[in-house]
Amino acid sequence: MQGVLIDTDIAIDFLRGVVSAHHFISGLWANNQAVLSVLTVYELTAGMKESEKVVTHNFIEACAVEPLSTEISCRGGDLYRKYRAKGITLTSLDCLIAATAIEKGYKVATRNVEHYPEQGLLIKL
Image 1 (tube, rainbow, N blue to C red):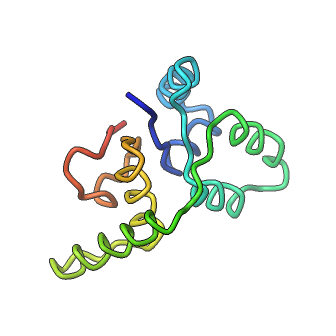
Image 2 (spheres, one colour):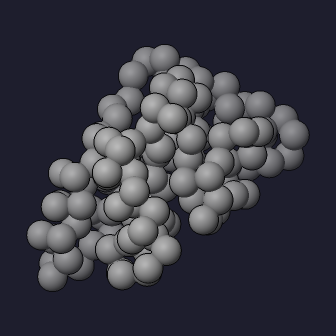
């Protein structure tokens, strides 16, 4: 597997000491497979407390960070429209994270499976 995009919920679990998330992410680090979307970096830093700043930034630095591109942005827009037409409203951030995974050949590690309806995209924790 090329890499695994760690969704914000799993990153927060890790930062809060959830054992299953720690084991999972440690395994990704050991194989150089831990990836964050730049949007997950945004969500983590937007929600952190001042006392969590150092540990959050250390976590981010331990992962590869995938930036947005025109291709990812267009794919995200396509996903948003596709699911909106089916009556499913996804957030722009989730569409862009899913688009990043699709464009880069990653899986998404998350507990929020309803945020990522694309078939074959998820690793559910």
